[in-house]
Length: 148
Image (cartoon, rainbow, N blue to C red; front, side, top):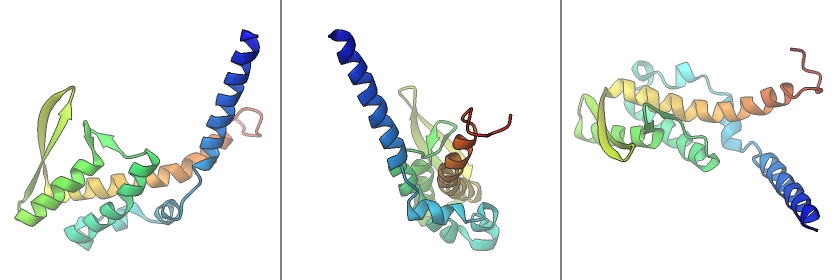
């Protein structure tokens, strides 16, 4: 009886996970981000800080919702966006980001242009990679016709 219960539990869990994976359908925001050219959209010199920040603010909440928000150098993209807003408001040439790493408060300083580019790129690329993963994952399954 225990074996049957375990088997049913494992199969149920497997079914739930596969449904959850297919339920992560591509949202319209992901489709929109997949069509963007990151180099052009996130170019601070061509578009300006405010426009690049607006792009980051537009796409990052969707990345957070899907659980694919980028985290580099121990700093989440939301922290980049928040710090960038404060720096633009104060008209500072550098962004100081406060974050926690291994339970300790830390801070890093980046140039405003670099932080804006980084926030925008991370927001857009995280959603583009969701779209790319659907194609490349299926291709990597053995027996699905993918040639290694």
